[in-house]
Image (tube, rainbow over all chains, first blue to last red; front, side):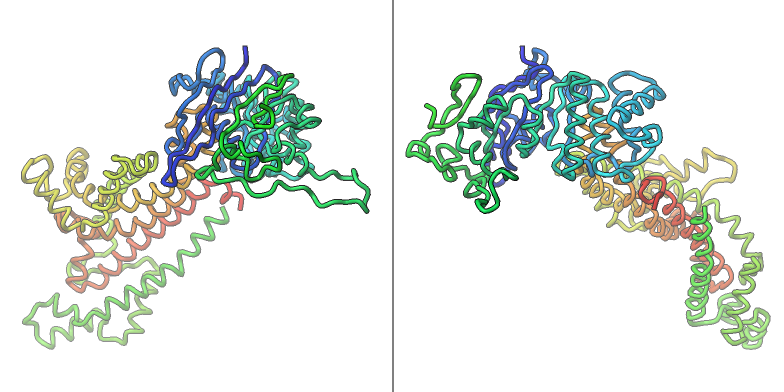
Length: 324
Length: 312
């Protein structure tokens, strides 16, 4: 059985501009102790997918119109709010993109971690605090017993993200959803945070759903990759397969957009590849395959009908008319 | 600590400014206190005698220096009307006003902050609209009118509350019973502003990333709203509460008159009508002092609420 299975999830935004299909019929699963990379440009629906699982979307305007989110054999979308609250933080937790603003500025980080523990682990105040300090030590924050008394504004961005990770992992959850955890950080700090997450994942056996637009990050960490575009999955495969043999023109475009440092000699340097055009607005998606206006391999059928996700073998799924 | 001392030292120039203004404004009112105290038919001699005795015939600057120096030594002077020490009279009136102000503020905070939070949690809902209408009524109904309405409805028609007087000293239930209507009158006036600030401040905070984090921890909604959001939203709310204290104090002037209560407000109105300079000056001095203390407390609360201010 899958640890978490998202089936035909549709999350739409109902606004005055019309209906924005932020997540449109998305199906994928996360296995125990696995790291799954969810990749795509801004606005492709990766964060909305994660927030749908956590039920953290503002409803309205957002609404989960269809689908199932199977966790532990039951559909989270059919569970009561109380059931969900018992799962959040305890069995599925999440870290966010902005460490600067994701921690509450008026409580100490020790308090914020201990709050999680006293809520879910039924610990006394003193014990929760001790566990919180232990967690800060685990995420390699120096002198954690002192740092626990500090407020978020006294910590650097990297330290805050460590504190967020400490909080998210405090109750030893089965799933950690990391929404662009390193995007707001310096490159050197990014590497440290990714290393730390992987180290803790191995220690705790947590499955990670890593949402990012940074292909470098998923290459290092993920076992499988799901590529999203305009609310749909366009390709899904093992990491190696995605990097060695990408099938979807969009995935290929993304990979070609990565700079290859030191790959070509100086005199033969070429300008960096880009995917032509921009991501279309959710409120005015093109007919047929929504990638067709930007696609280098566009065919007549692409303008007419949307392709289906097909398995081309070795657990490699592609949604493109090139692979009928 | 040094911060508190610095703030307390700042009181001195502020108070000098206040008493100077009060002195000038009172003396700018045309007519002599003598005519009020001695009556219409007083002779020119008796008026001159009265003014000489109180030093009102001296140049204004001399009177002013006299006034400031006596305040510096804690001497508030004697009332023209009664001949009693102003400070004794103030000590007698102050508790009634403190009761009214405290009760009014508590009511204002409960109604204002409560409605504000409820409104912010579900913006544009029915509850939010009702809350906003109540707030609008609060800010737009003058005290002398809302006070009358309360008197007519709860005092005369329903007979639930007495409408006149503040009660005997020492009889706590009676004092509280008589406090309800006037406290609601002033409290309701202030609650509107507090409600609006609470609503907008909460709406802003509820949009913040750390609120999403709090929800992602699986915390109950009430804990997220009251613990995580309200403390962050509190600074503008506390500011407005501190500032509206001034409005509340001026509301007590009218409210005490309407409900025929003892208190600084009524005392001040009478003092001004009688052109009783020492009494009016002393009264305004005490009210200003209260306002300054409230503002100091507001500043200190900032530090308690927000560590970033404490550490700055």
